[in-house]
Length: 401
Image (cartoon, rainbow, N blue to C red):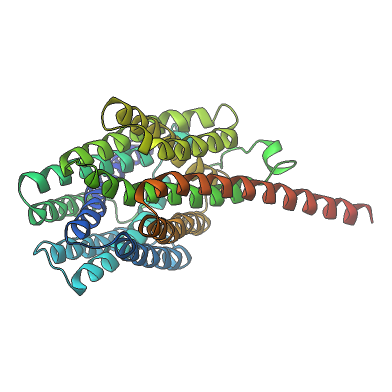
């Protein structure tokens, strides 16, 4: 069997495994928020649990990025999946004690390990005929599709049966991912690869691509986490049930999944940084429009717009983070830094939106939070431009001197 065929099979296996992991993870995150809301927790308390989840995920992500050397890939992934199963089994009896916090910690650790290792594994197994942007688009589309399908099924099972059945559904998803991981090759030799070309203007007169990717990751996750926390609470308080909430959230993620490969393909043609920036602005604007969209067609249109912009921003920022590197050790560190910035946004955003929602109103928080984040993004870009210009001026003076 020739190498391209081997790589194609391995890459597809990575996508299938990621799909089922994302289904279980997407369902878990939706359910743990709704579960706390139905048990009388405040938005601040919900945000605290989600922040702890994100802190653990970010810490583990950084450690894995620095320690991973391309070995024992399959065994590490299997271990993360076992932890994921344990987390959902903790929630299956519907506890209301320290087990909720422990489940969030365990799932955060599993996310931190799995997201870094599987991303690097998938990029290593990318067929030579598949450009990086499209590969990242397919991979992140798989995550989005899995999250959306998991949220949809998790919400439906909760309304039809109970939280217990939904958390057992998560266990089933992680178990399928476990079986798929067992089929990955244990002895994988990375093929020779060339890094993606970076436009000269992005590294000379404009902010470097790498810092823009990190800043984008923080803003993207902050905005999306504001939606993940506030939208279920806002919807429950306005009379929507879990099935409708899951349907809206699932539709958003499915649309994001459809868009991602197209966004990755567009990156190889023109203005990837500009596409990234416009997508982030569109996502923030869509989130701020939710309270004004009603509960019918208007809300569906806004959620659809958010799905498109989220999918585009997730693909462009993730590709910018690794497009000029192929070495596994460097890629794993960059992925860990990128994921850490995602996690930082997921950690700070729940606290920020929780304070606004509890002190003022959930509706106000839905408007203020995303607009604040996109404002910070603009300030960050200005800061990067200033730093880049200053660095280039200093370099020019030294060369002349």
